[in-house]
Amino acid sequence: MKRRDFLTASAAATTAALLPRFARGAVAPPSVAPLLKGQAEHVISIWLGGGMSQIDTFDPKRRGDPAKKLAGSYYGAIKTAVPGVEVCEHLPRLAPLMDRVTAVRTVHHDVIDEHAAATNRMHTGRIVSGTVVYPSIGSVVAHERRAMADGVPPYVLIGYPNLTRGPGFLGPRAGFLYLTDTSQGPAGLTRPDDIDAGRQSRREGLLAGLRAQHAPGPGDARAADYEAAIDQNLKLSGPEFMRSFKLEEEKAGLRAGYGGEFGQRCLLARRLVERGVRFIEVSHNLNFVNGTGWDVHNTGIKQQHGLIQELDVAMSALLDDLAARRLLDRTLIVVSSEFGRPPEFDSGGGRGHQGRTFTCVLAGGGLRHRGAYGETDELSKKVVRNPVSVPDFFATIHAALGIDYTKNLYDGDRPVPLTDGGQPIAALFG
Image 1 (spheres, helix red, strand yellow):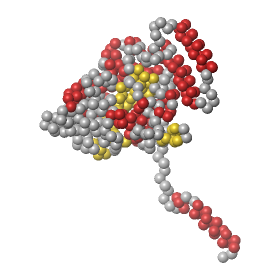
Image 2 (cartoon, one colour):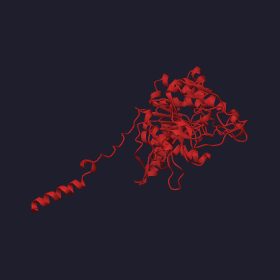
Image 3 (cartoon, helix red, strand yellow):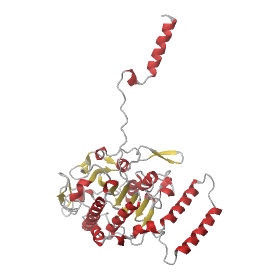
């Protein structure tokens, strides 16, 4: 072989070796799936603290009997608007609306079946870490989408505040505004009766002088965040946003249709959506009016039907109200709990805790609903088909809002995957 021919052949061989395998005739690697992206603008997240029993609500099975220690559902089941999908007999108003709803029956996590740890998991999507304080899903949505209007918070909590609902490493700008009494609004924003407009103006002038003397230095991000929070709170205390909490402006019939205390929180959530709030969490049964809430150990289960009926009345009214205002496709309703309940009855006739499979619910939000998604075994103890991890469930929420669920957030220089690798439920899109 001549020297020129040798060099030409060698260069060709080297180039071929450097080309991707598929360019040399091998099978191409699988392409990355395109991001799923919905068009929802808001989330109303209904939190059933204590552990909603999936087998007694949205995943009914054969009828059980605590007296005979026969595992199974505590109540009978009824048909819904979706053929083959049944729900508990105490959900008669939601049953004809299930074509707008998907009960995700195969949510699961491996967190110890203890309330605090599981509540953290179902708000942050992570287990508790000693090195990172993870943000809640409400704070992530607030961080990614912000409020839709000036002078409105991106995230409102109608319930008691705690760390699991907070912004974690995202900082106070992604935090929540909270209230527990729908008749008064947030206590920290409600102006006392003796503070008129003139006095408020003088107070704000004094605050401005103090802030000018102690402005944060360059690079002091934490102080700057708190300065921004002060500015936002001053806007929120104005009459325009505070009007959101005047439920008496609603027609009496509509208010009555939402039901009692919990229903009024759901009505307030709808008003906050209209104002431009992105994420509202509504806690149910704040003060455990039935003695145990959704944590139905022992005889607590005897009052469980009251909670289910409250949920039925309020959620069905919310769906109808949002639809009438053409807001349902833009508002994703999420119902979640820290875990579910096993089919077996405890010694007192109630139920224990179960995280290996339970139900969370999605409604509205422009999704392609199907009544139910996923399948559990004959007693709702194990996942049979289409498991949904907590990161998957969170990714579905983010995708519905058009948020890139594959991106990283940053705790300083440390990248933190938005959903810990979750993949949305593709069947609900498209």
